[in-house]
Amino acid sequence: RELGVTDVDVTTIHVWARERLNELSIKYDFKVRIMEEPQIKVILTELTNKYLLTSRVKSVNINILYSYITGSKKMDISDNYRRTLNAIEQRYINYKRDNNLYDFTDYPLYLYNVLMAYNETIKGIDALFVDEFQDVDETQLKIFDMVDSKKKFYIGDAWQSIFQFRGADGAVFSKLDDFEVFKLKKNYRSLQEIIDYATTV
Image 1 (cartoon, rainbow, N blue to C red):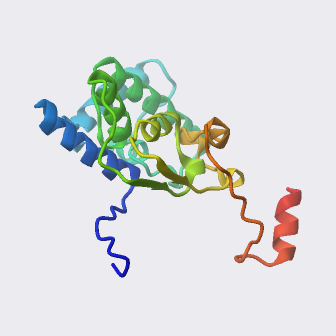
Image 2 (cartoon, one colour):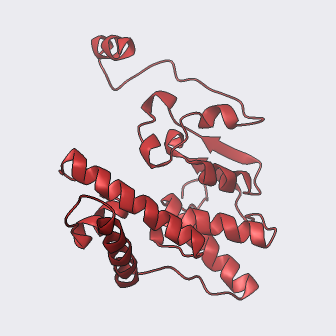
């Protein structure tokens, strides 16, 4: 505010993508359709019932499955049960893609598909700042490439890329073109002994 800047939008990638989608829906007169929890659970129930017919698993809790596929990956469950949830989740993702369906976890993908369908770019953004860039996936990077702005600042640490299990691209930094790289040489968060030990791992 002291610099006269009042239109800074700080948000998650999913909220940001949803806002861009809403803008495009007004411009091109289409309705943004996102599945809600009841519809998702109906689909999950159908997919789970089919899965149970061909596996040794006796039952799956749909509420736990729903929480798992919508982001609660750190729940305390057995490895076998996690494998079951992963298997059903992949079937759910395939079902969404085959039927052109999206839930709230798909906002970036939904935005990308709409941008491609209308041959659009994202305009009206003076500068784009992406934090935790090591957690960006392939679709998100394509969206950032479609932002019509000459000022882009990506900050992150490839060594901290820990979300590759959910699609983060560990090599995302090497895919940037025409970017000047600044390396932060000092760590103000940890004692040198901790840094030295972590570097050996």
